[in-house]
Length: 201
Image (cartoon, rainbow, N blue to C red):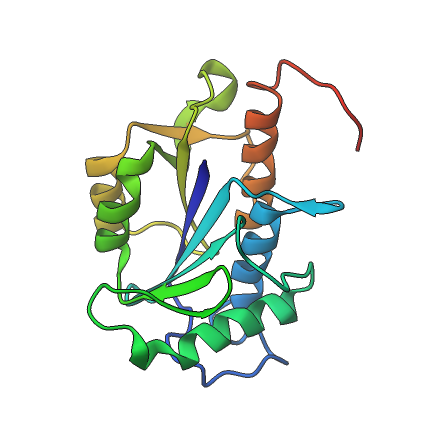
């Protein structure tokens, strides 16, 4: 199982946003791309992947590749899945999830609680520019990647993450958009550490 936790600092926590202005909705366009980059292949879906969007440190929307339906490559329809989940926020009681559509769930969890729930599932890798270069590490078997949106992690978030993390990892010499980092992370795992290339584009 591969998992991604993406911190959405300015992301909406209610459904009151326009699907016609996703950048203006706390960069929900970027978060939607993170979902599609983590789950979609050219002609298929990664069924062994779960992606968790931590929105405003208040709620976490999870998309499960094994069961999600109607996930398309465009930002708007992916954001609509998030919006639909937020419309059902009132049905989530405590930390019990509500599943408004197949493979999409919402829980009232901030980053700390999400790390408590998810980090124990595998090796937590914080994607950060000050990390160990990925080629110098053996790819983990069940990675949980933690990354931030268009904003850097706060000191408090990094402290919290380091309390759960096994390692900080950097994916290259240049800063990448979060969705691009997810693609590179998949490539690192798919190629067994960038060393075993086979198949096609």
